[in-house]
Amino acid sequence: MRQESPAEGRVSEPRYAAFMHPWLLLPWLILPAPMAQDAQAAPAEPAAIQAPTLDPAEAPSSAEAIERLRLFIQDNPDAEYISAARFRLAAALVTEADAGGDPGGYGAAVEQLDLLIGEVEQGRAGSFEQIAEAWYLLGWCLRDLGPTRAAQAWQRVVELSPGSQLAASALLHLGGQAMDQADWEQAAAHFEAVSATQADPATWAQATTMAGWVHYKADEWDQAAEAFAAVLGQDAPGTLQDEALEYLVLVLVERCEEQGLDVVRQLDPTLARVPAALQARFVERTAEVLESMARFDQAEALRNPSDKPKRKRAKRKD
Image 1 (cartoon, one colour):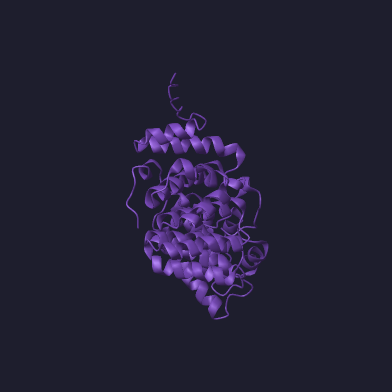
Image 2 (cartoon, rainbow, N blue to C red):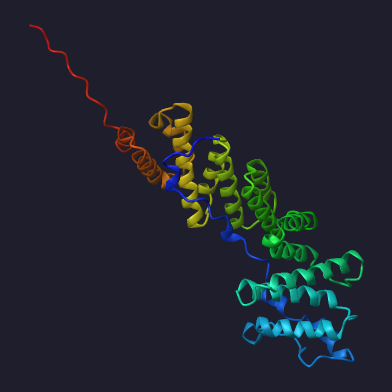
């Protein structure tokens, strides 16, 4: 591993957490029509259970949804849709915990999800089909409470829903965990696996940026440059494009420093990877990094490549 250069301190690590959100949707907090009908048919129907609505303006708050779902589970333990109710209760608890209203909600959600997964494995989950989503949510809850179990949960997501957007999100988490352990090879493998999924453009750009970053940390210059250049070539979110350009500059400068190469002479091969619209900015940013390293002559040569030293003409002898 190389020594940290003065230039590296000028760029923050990619903000991979920006896209890591729990797989929660508002309808998860609302009982589907079949579940509502089941509740209405049950002898001990809780008054809080009402017919569902898909109108966000009429949707219950998280606290209200949690209370309704707890009552439904308590009063209808053998209902056909009890597993779906547990899943929605867990989602509501996580939403509340993420909002800061109830930090203990993650533990309560884990309890419900463990019961749900047990029901699935024992064949008692009825028509419940959101199994991969349940494993993903379990990983989200355990990311701090139990990282090892969280990793196992996200691996199950990849196995149960290969190639999906959900699997792409799980792979991002797994890559992030590997980064925390400085396991650059494993991290790169997880991030690069996202390209084999049906990830949306933003998730793909995030994973590719992170793959470039871990290759950069491992001094794998070619792979790092390829990843960052790929992000620059796509319509990536502005922040990620900025990150990719910054790190592609560092790949050029630090590679030259490690291998004893001249940055000015090595500029063209790297610049060829950069979209035309970003090339001037890339050159300027490279010059700024060189200036931060007190390499003023090289910085000036980048900004003014046509200014060559004039040769002194020999005096003509008469």
